[in-house]
Image (tube, rainbow, N blue to C red; front, side, top):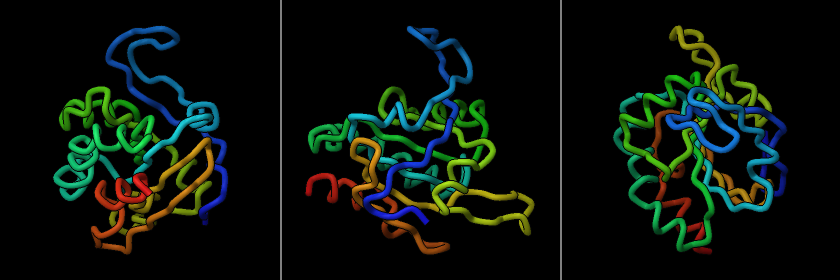
Length: 168
């Protein structure tokens, strides 16, 4: 399992773009984790799947609401990573009104989750391999803090916990 001091694993996530821009087209665009995290402080939180009740009611809204506080604490970007495809993450971003505040990144094949060692096997429930619920503060591609949620809990992966860590 990834731990404090480790470098984020090399992986490619997908991000759905609503607007064509410099270097990105409308639709799914590849995000190289190593390149995207280089030189930045990132508040990263991961969830088992999009549109789940707790994640939609508490996790994502908490990070959206605290966007300005994270920026004031020196965080450059907020990433939400989930084992879904980019189209689902794009739809969830619209539903949650994340705008430019939270990057909704798809880990469709669970490659990032597997590389971190933070997987949740929900095969018995028909959902396959997913990501554990966790949050981490990443500085220049290295894990500065890591908060792994116990199954069925909502105690350490929330925005308040990670914001307090970002403030130091």
